[in-house]
Image (tube, each protein chain N blue to C red):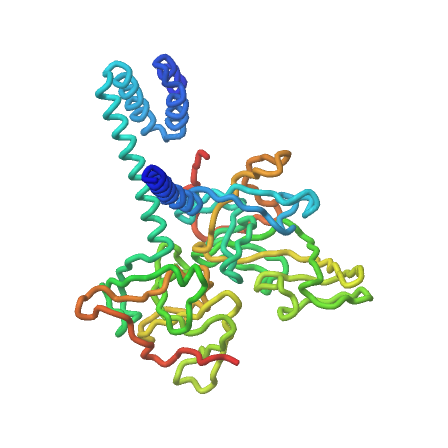
Length: 220
Length: 232
């Protein structure tokens, strides 16, 4: 009801197009925002029609500023989604390669081009909680045979990594929950490949090879 | 000469600036808000693609904003990134969420509790036809067999199928497979929720969430304290 009244006010002030979109937007908002939005729209309409040229200039500048914000926001989204992002790691599962509170740069291109290889450190979404990210090393790709028994077991058990999955393990084997506990991880959950360590500054640079020697040799 | 060079440079600048506005905005909208996709295959009949490829496939609008926090509801049709092929997206119906106990049809465990962070998806179709290009040379006599994991490209950890009929036309074999597609997938793989069918025009409709009554979950482990009251 109030949105229809809002549209009527816009119509009276010869701003029908803007009025239609404004009323539709206000009708989509939940209750507590709706009254605020309608008040703002009414004030703006009044000022634009009464306040004259100066207010129109201010409104034009504001809309231009919003346009730039949208454009740069979209460019930022594309950069973080397709080029790379900065990640702060926490937890002991990748020691000594990455320690807690390190900042690394993970690039997204190799994930989108499907060029993740064995031995890469990847950031992936956790299979059990999609809001959490995990940082592990790729030990085996699809089709590889992974030895899942511990070094102290007498009988060795093996598992094949299914199609479209990868086997992830942390470098700190004693203190890491990884594919040894939750199984192979779908490739599509991988977010990016860690390529550069940025903080702390004395450790700046590329990351080391796997210290565990668990990476599967080329499977035949 | 100078005017032509000036006009050319202005044109190039206008083109480049337009390009740098249009492409990021389009990519952001496709990644965050809405996505349009054509549905292929018959695993969701009769809800999607009811006549197969005869009259053309359905085109659906996928709402990516509503799944940004991985909130799916039972009965939604969602598109997920395939766990078998990371560049493919599959579209199925959500049957159960994390913590639900369900009764499965043809899976290795008869009753199953969906683990945390996962959800259970199924196709609506209870029978399916495939082309022989996946299977090899034609057979002349009909035969029954339980297809094994190695031979069937459709068999993932979630497909049980019984090959029960064959008809041959030269090298083309149509295998009638009484198959049923079901998956347990991680919530992180969810891509978007199919909200509307937008093509062909005689099939314009809003997709409503609904579960077939025989596929309802048996019970839920976590108490269903708050049901999401989304005014869509």
